[in-house]
Image 1 (spheres, rainbow, N blue to C red):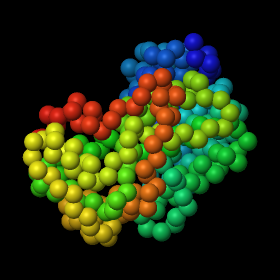
Image 2: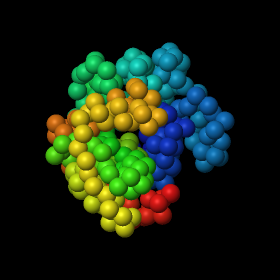
Image 3: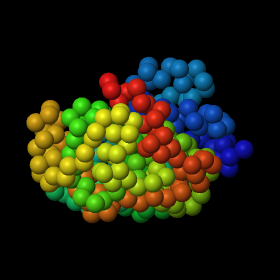
Length: 295
């Protein structure tokens, strides 16, 4: 059995795709006492039926969050979607976890986080300061630095295939895309097995350039797709023109320009270490979802 299968393990954001899947994998992995933290308990009735302890909690209410963590030994904090308020929310959640006596904090971070208060810098900045708070907490931790989701390459591929062009601002940089399933499996593995203070780069098996992606999109669609480099500003403008909210367009453009700087090309064996199997490649993921590429 896993080292911590008998520990009380809590997962925040349990209604989300990543949180729910992590809980399912914890149960499959033999965890005996799993706590699901959520704003809406009614949506988790199926997990309650499997013996999961459903508790209402919110990062916006640190005192209530600490109360919901009563008896919890190991916690997975899944980063929130409120970009403008994320740092304050998550720092408060870390402090609440410490106050509640949590001994190990796992956190879903991002590859190469860094401090940046400029527009579009919400993602690396919030992850950086949350990691700092966790490191200063005195608790053991698993910092799960997830690379960009392979899953999101389906809509990217659909657009590129339809237009024949993959616009990008990544320069010659690469990204080690990883599936959400592999991220969930790695999180479950860390909660069940990880000890001490660990930093894991959660990546796919290879780092791909925009040209590599274009070639894969062309291969699996049977249509020509060319990579076309543009500036980060032009990419953000194009996304906004296509209906993406300006704030999110800036965030997406920042991921592209960070890729150009070499920040997202880290490939590691963390998924295999935490799960006992290698991560799925982008090519294999696209092959498994080939029908969606023409949707």
